[in-house]
Length: 345
Image 1: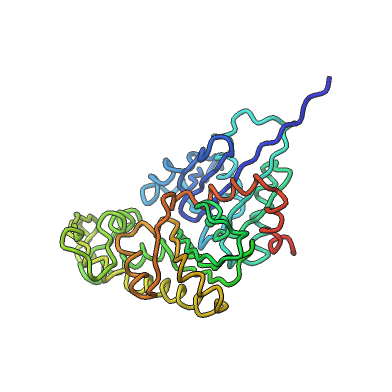
Image 2: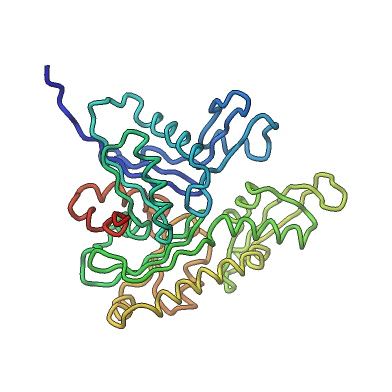
């Protein structure tokens, strides 16, 4: 009996903060934190995604809670493979060995060939027949609906958890770009350091992220209505006892000044390196922001103030890279061209 071979196409945004999986027929089918918890004594995977993230900073010694990606690249190969295997099991529970799986993975544009090979090897070990590695700015541009093959320059800034990828795209390729290892994680670290300096309180990564997303506002000219406050809890540095303080948007404005200025400088440098014709295009097309960092209040207005360009936050900012990796599979020949730089190793 002849068993028909069918093709499963999925796109993966293997991010430092979150992993997203896109299916061309169903859209986003998984969006989970890139965290895995393992029992060190038995080596058994206890949890992945959100349940594992909730264990961060709370687990006993025998349970190892790992974020296996740092700065947009794999820092723990085995843990990444185990995490990805569990994620794929969640969304493809009845995967058939007769299926042909094609996977596109988005990676930061600044990663090395060795790092790209590591990503490809992890995905191939999942059983994928064809693997394409796509720069995240290109994937994000496809995901937000930009015609990347047009002879018109478009600028995109993808502010993720581990990296900020800024690129100018035209004629199906990245003309000039900057990949900065300053993004959401660095912002969280900056908030932790600020809270210790200013309030003598030690907070965890989750609390820092909550402060960033709930009261974060980095535009100096924000209205009073935009300046909200929240209670932050942690440990008093001096007494070692639990402590709670009120923080507001002014605190985040001060805390995030350095990482935000580095990202804006990266945008300016990318613009400076653009050919004049593309610079003229970007005057019309503006800058598109994607990634979790795009949602920080006032970021778009600050970039607009610093560059004079129109800045647009993509409607699907959080899912843009994942959607772009999946949508790129609709035209394999174009995908091979977009990913040609990654295939030279």
